[in-house]
Figure 1: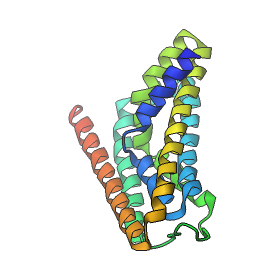
Figure 2: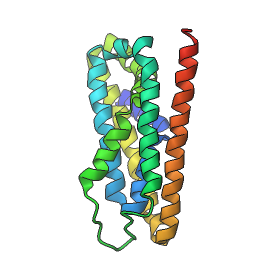
Figure 3: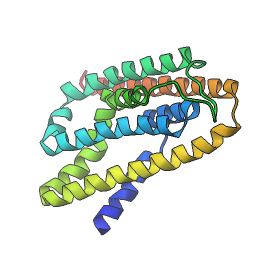
Figure 4: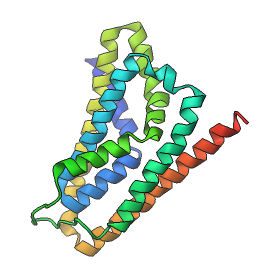
Length: 209
């Protein structure tokens, strides 16, 4: 149990910094409420869970190869650039104020979470940050591996629920125009993350030129 709770805190710590998934969750939470923001988080966690299983089978060593990892930064940048552009372009669409009936489907928000999380840049992040921790625990004790993985996912889930609870309360004080501009800001942030991925791509490329 002590190992589990230790990695719950690790999951919380990893989820705290603002990332692409957090931005997309916030955007959907503001536009369509708690459930749709959480759908994004669940989409992200679905990819996280699949990656944990794949990492346990030795995928980490393959994804860590420079010939695989370097292009993934660029492809990840294109993923986030598209999602960021789409956020800005459709900032005034699908906005549901508190108390109004939501027209957007749950699975549409879930799909957005999948798209952001499946971004190759996110895969590189998982290999670099979690791959070493998970591989170490898998090598020492297979049961420890699954306790650590469960702890990390639980920490991410707690972060998502806490963040979206705050957002669902805050959106009650926002009007349609305010939500539109916050959505545009979210899109700009996602494009900013795309720029960071391009930077990482260039830096990684320099090491092999």
